[in-house]
Image 1 (spheres, rainbow, N blue to C red):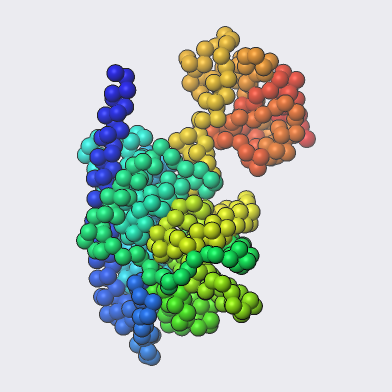
Image 2 (tube, helix red, strand yellow):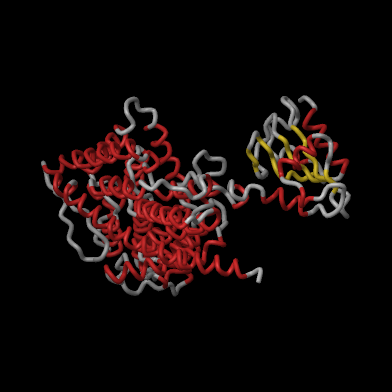
Length: 566
């Protein structure tokens, strides 16, 4: 009988997840129509340029001529200005890329999103992308779908972890529709929350249901074709090709390390521009438009150019220009406050990187077993896998988007290599990934921050204090007043030690300080009202209270180091 409420709750969430999937499908359809309308009015209507869309390897693209090309900055500036006026007047949180806003809401605000966000995000993102801004549709679609799901949760009075699970289901639904990749996006939604190899596994069943429902509904109305058309015969059969893909993975890791620094560097610089904030997206749009005058191939999502790169119809010079300018274009568009996603520009950059490296391999090793298109597909996955720290879901979603399942082995190698290189290069960086709201692991999220402390408390099974009667604040107060907790059977104690100003531990990392004391283990750091899960690189500060497990002699050594002046 005790399990009946649990089953009822699970079945209810299954139904809600399917309903969220329907919201995601219709949100994607409506947003695509709105973006297409904005492009016809702005970029096409003003500058006469329609960037190629995905769907054909043989499409012909007419670049705008002179002097009409000089009108591109007019279109991008108008789009940025209109977007900025709407965002900063009605919903400032709708600026930038929507997926990061959803991640932040999950970790910090109980999955709560204001009801106006879906409409504001749809309009402003359509203006940004439709005017030629270097941004993608995935972030806005995710935030729109999440916002609709939040409205449903509010009406149904869904709270707590159920609401958070449905929030991730909404993200998966919107993304699965726009990218036609239900499995990859279901996993992406539980992987994108963390910058380490961590997943919000409890929500996976609901993201899968929402993604499948959304994909089926979207396909019923728009067709079942893949997002990208890929040349035939892209199948890995020669292990001798793997070194080339390993090199691609390394290069993708370097690119993935540079992109977050570029994006948030521009964002921080834009915030220092004097004047009203809605001017910033207009300035960003103007800068992007000036780039577009010289290289119009940089504008928009870039998906059509990816297919032309697969087909081998883009000259090396064009590939290099898109590769070098796509990142700055994305940073100027989104970093200035424009509304749009980072996925499309990032995978376009990755596709161009793969094409350039594939051409180099083809010239160095004549008769190479895999064509350049294979490097384009793998490059798309590898750059985003590193920049977003999502190596598993990216592998699956790109395979679904392209039908390139024959490249799973080289893509696995490139993804993991890029992930490791990117993590190494961004260690200690202010902005290590494209999503600044990501946290390293579950224990670093405010939702799960007490996990390590609770595990330490579970070690206590005897003594004068019953752990089931103690909550964390009371536990800390007991230890602060000289009442350490005995750990049964081990002879160890759990104690709270305060770091004094100017002491040996003040300003050191956990590895440099407590890590050098044999038998002492730091399990949590209390800093003001915040709980920090200590890692080797965590830097201790004066005023911190560190929860330490260890034998009495180890505790004495830690206490001495925490109070003795340097």
